[in-house]
Length: 276
Image 1 (cartoon, rainbow, N blue to C red):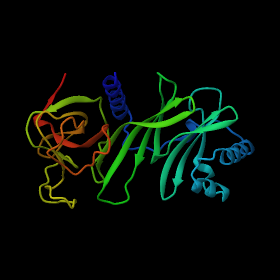
Image 2: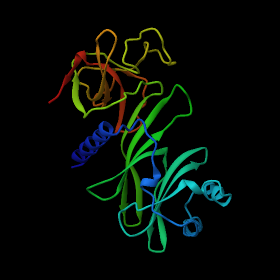
Image 3: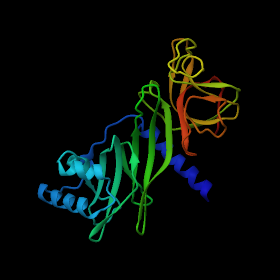
């Protein structure tokens, strides 16, 4: 059952990526926020910061100075009649996300998830919200991270759960358009995942000992999904791919932080066999 659920979440996130790229976008909060008067907004935020003891101290301090009040968003998180809150803004030295679900006269607070929300969708199955989240590293040579997360609400327990995480190098070329995922398997050993849709064996932006614009090398039998394509000046067809990491790469510059982590980049389609 757990394996089926994991596959289901990966399938959902793959569709999200193809239809509305998780790699780009700015969230229009006005499409999701409830209409709350300035007076009512202040009363509710004063109540929140006063009653919920576990709110990080930096958020409360910044709120008292009037510096982060626009980072609180009134949204009906769990599709009931209560007004809930999403905080997305500075927590210490970086941005974070916290969900506050209204329960009676108080709020249940979720765990903290790092990053910026760049997209929201409401699940047709649960009525809860799914989030597309961007996490940006501090150093230019490190990865970018994009997450698909969803809310889990149980009695006295609200959590933000990451269902899948995509990592790729900061200078990876991103497609202009996407198509529905096409599953494939690599049919050649030591097949390269690159940051751009071109064979570049000279330039190397990485400190690690790996050639050109290669970010990972995959063995035969590695699974992935193509979600975009590009033809280079020599007529070579490249696929923009999500590698599932079902087999440990021969070599990789991308860090696997979770079992749901996937790697993203470009592969020549020549030795990729579609799985129908």
